[in-house]
Image (cartoon, rainbow, N blue to C red; front, side, top):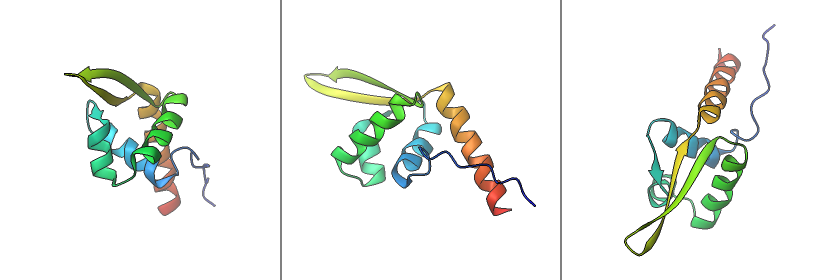
Length: 95
């Protein structure tokens, strides 16, 4: 019988997994890029980014682009490790 490692509930959300998948392949991404790629509402993305940030999976950088506020996100080492563990566990379920 397989060892079915529990899946990280934080990453088992479609939107959070999508955000992490985007960030894992990029150095960083602006909020508007994440919104465009996921098709989610700004409010929903904000809530999910906050959850990922609180867990230490991503870093959120607030700055300005001209006079407009700019939110940039990047995955942390903790986030990379959690994502890799999640993917490995998911593959174990499938195989």
